[in-house]
Length: 92
Picture (cartoon, rainbow, N blue to C red):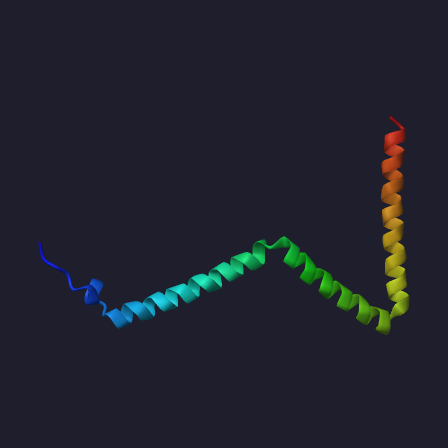
């Protein structure tokens, strides 16, 4: 049985292996960060809510009438859905 030189595994020097491991660890860390960003629903919802608040704040300053119309429309839609649900339950 021959003894292999641990400094030259697969034809790489120890420095090359260390550099490769560091790059691989960095790539793995970036991949895990990206996966965590996608699957962390509360964090994503928080970011979306922050973006929406910013957009609403800008709209309130630039066009308050349009914002009021959007809010009134949303209230009307919720009211109609609630009424339709109530009617479907009471008609049974």
